[in-house]
Amino acid sequence: MKSRFVLIAAACLFLIVGCKKDDFDLDNPDVEIFVNQLKSGKYNKYKKGDNGENVWLLMPNFSENHIQSLINFSKDTTHIVAFPVNPLSSRRPFPEGREYFILGECLLWTVEGIRNGAGYGSLDPFLIDAAKNKSERYKGLKGNEILIVRDFYKDWWDNFKNKDWKNKNPLEGTSYQWF
Image 1 (cartoon, rainbow, N blue to C red):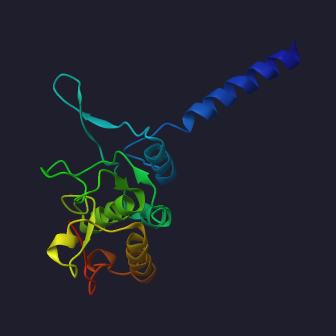
Image 2 (image 1 turned 180 degrees about the vertical axis):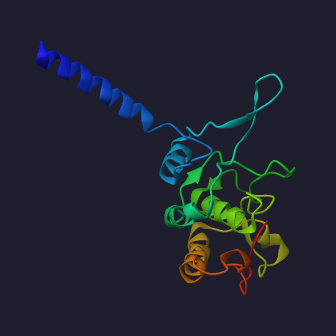
């Protein structure tokens, strides 16, 4: 009887812990859970409309404390189908000729939103290279270029996290810009 009770208690604990992994709190976000949900297509924290319909995905309330983790995960250039975009933008959230988000680029955009205090890095979550001619510029960056930008953000954080990091633009002096 005692061993049966222990077995039932262990099973309940396993279920609670197993279900907890997919929970996501917008006010106390966990970067790893956020990334896993984005990659699996299971991130589902929506702004609701008047009739309860999903209007847009909500950006978690990330802070300075999340920057290192966001940069760490930004080396992942997996293509994802959904990401919380800036609700003020009326443009399509992808560069010309692309119908997907790149995870690492979106995570860096999230870092930029923390840095600039707006919650969003810009109107749209993709980078352009302003040095390219106009016909190529708005096609956005490829994965290898995003990894170059990631290095700029990593160096910025390593050098300024204990200084005036908000006022130092990681892309200053480069041709890369948020769209």
